[in-house]
Structures are given as C-alpha cells and as structure tokens.
Length: 358
Image (cartoon, rainbow, N blue to C red):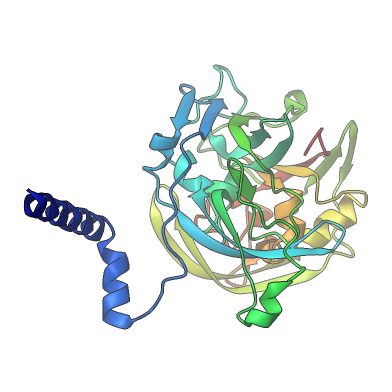
C-alpha cells in the first residue's frame, strides 16, 4: 500500500514537472542552452484591471484583464525626471503600447462635423481619481514604434549590478509595484504626462472657431500665400523674420493609406522656432491645430513639439527638392512613420491653451 502511494506521488510530481516545463519551455530552454538567468521575463496583467474607450468612437469598448492580455506587450526602460528637473528613478516597465489598442478602434464623429477624419482628435486619459492627460491622436497613431506611449501594468526599479551599491540605493523613488495601469511617455524628457491608475481613454475634438476657418473640400486645389495665427479671439498674419531655418536631407514619405511615396530633401522653418516667434507665450502644455486652405486639419501637442527629439525636426517647409512649393507652406514631421500629418497649403494655426488637468 505504501509503495502504491509513493508511486502515485511520483507520477503526480512528474506530471507537474512536465506541465510547468511545457508552459514555460522557452524560459527553461534559455536556462539549459545558455546557462543564463533571464532578467526580462513575461509578466501577466493583473486580474483586477479594467479599461474603457469612449467618446467619438463607433461604440464604447470595455476591456477586462483577460481581453487586455490578448494585446502584444513591450518592455521599456526609462530614466525619469520630474518637471522640476529632479531625477526620480530608472525603471523597466512592461505594458501595452496605446497604439495597439487604438489601431483596432474606429473613430466616428457626430454627423455634420467640420472635419470627418480623426487627425484633429484629442485622446484624453483619465485616472480612477479623475485626473487627466491630453494627447493628440496623431502622436499615438502616426509616429514610429520607438519609445511608444504605453499603458504599463508592471514596473521594476533598475538597481546597480554591484551588491554593495544596490543595498541602500536611494535614487528609485517609486520601488513599489504598480496599482493598475500607468501611462508612460518614454519619448518625453519629464514625467509630466505620466498618469497612474488609468481607467478610461476618450476620443474627442477640441472646440474650434469653425465659423472663420475654411470648410473641408476634398480634392480642391488651393494656394495659401500666408499663414494666419489665432490665439483666443486674436488673429494676425504669421511672421517669419526671426524664425530659424532648417534642412531635412532625407525624408522618407510613407502614407498610412497608400504606402511608400518617395524620399525627398526639404528646406524651411523650424516649427519650434516658428511657434515661439508667433506665439511668444505658448508652452508645452498647449495644443496646436494646423488647418490647410482646403480644410484639412491636424492636431499636435506642445509636449510633442517642445519636449521630444522628434519635435526638433518638425518643420514648415517652403522648398521641396530645391523648388519652391506652388501650394504655399507645407507642414512636416519627418520622424513620423506615416506622413498623414504633412499638409500642403497651411493657412491657419490655432493655439489651444492648457485645459484642466492637462
């Protein structure tokens, strides 16, 4: 009898070992084949996480933890500074790039909207406490995959490899695990738009002075000989007198809908310099809407323009491949993966000032 019990236990133990090996095969293969101890292992989304996507969408979306586990995740290391310039730690996060969530959601604006495409949308992240962060739809969808805006579900403080140095390491101010989804923005120089315990993403357009802006007319050939700046109720023609010039020698242009177009050289005005010249009181908390003479629109965030390396390459072009543009000025963001934010005939730029909890 005792022998049967022992034999049964051995069979059960063998079954458990086989089960864990099969479900963790890649981990053990690394261990056996290389002798290495993996430091970056797959973490599971906690079971109590819930995310809503609403606003200008075809339907409201409700994502449970099990639904979120279907999305591809990423691991990102960050060096984090507060808006005041204080170092607050270095961490490794695992999370879902927001692009992965939004690319499967169809925006839908109300009937009669002034612009029927999503390029003028704001994306508002809301925490359980009601705090919010605002982004442009474009800086999530149109940019490349380096350092994506991410909803992280796991955080690990990075410590020095020296045991002595790591014993009382004082520089990671947030060693505790995450409680919910943490919005992280690895492209940005500070954590000003990071947000803990995100529960909702809302797509909506900002209020605009539509009555004085050009109507959307697809396929219309138009020329914009100047750019009009708007800030609240003040309107004035843009000045280029003191704006810094910039050259982009190799701009690879790929459209979101129609693929590769060409590779060109461009020359024009640095966007940062243009905005600081024409909107001297603007900050990285603002949003900027660009409108073409045919009514095409694109929204940019000040954080993206002034607080990322991509922003340093954004331009208002007046020459392409050495020739003056017949349509007028062209907006360009050469670091974007897709060129859909580029527009000929830029006619208006509207500054949208900081909103509550932005």
